[in-house]
Image (cartoon, rainbow, N blue to C red):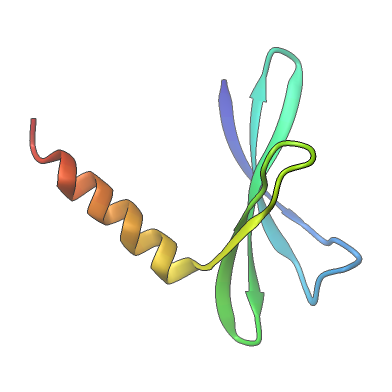
Length: 75
């Protein structure tokens, strides 16, 4: 599995987005994208087909990732 980030210009977006993609078994999934909206960084996490996309302020999402790492400790 390969993790990649690339800049895209979706027609329905205010500006460019950074799409996070995973390449595996000849398939490319784009489970998340980061964008600026009204001056704020936001992240959208996409569910599988038919699911609901989750959208968060990027700073909040990054903070919870850091808390997850802290919860694991130094093991």
